Length: 220
Image 1: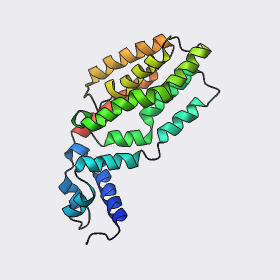
Image 2 (image 1 turned 60 degrees about the horizontal axis):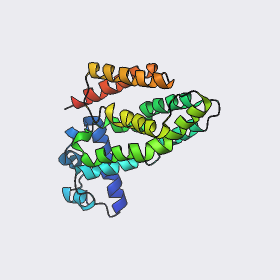
Image 3 (image 1 turned 180 degrees about the vertical axis):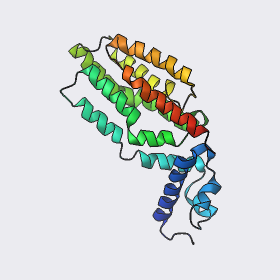
Image 4 (image 1 turned 90 degrees about the horizontal axis):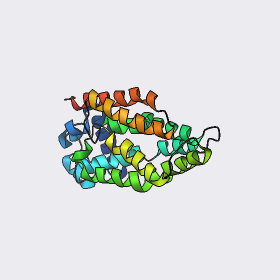
């Protein structure tokens, strides 16, 4: 198969193929040659004409995956739900971050963010500079106002919650055993309980998420 004369179609084919392989084999176990072998005749030159590396392909796959930003839409809907108090909204948002389909697909690609410094740095900065102030802080402030959350510093707590959820409790950043998960969840449960937010029923979801990622790491 000759190189597609329409560059956008070539890019789409590369991204479709790469995403399929990342989900099936895991990012760490997928090579550039694997992608080439599944492109129906396109050469390595066709890939490097559009992308500089496998990580560059991953960045494009991730950007396309999150283009719809379904989690942000769900969070906005929760934030606007007048039937929920602040504590209930915070719990609902945390739950949706665990079960959102786009987030699950990203986790299913078996990426180790400690090996991806640019992505890890972006996650850290987004956690503090975007997610905390724009998504979590307003809900905390609402909870403080309606009395469902008892904390004096909404900004700082929003940053802590965002960092704990996105980094400390993220199996893509830190590999964790079942015992690690249980201990970390106990810390989170205790901290959230002090705020008046019961997230005990989320433990099985976090446990299963970590189990799936550990299983992905064993893919060959």
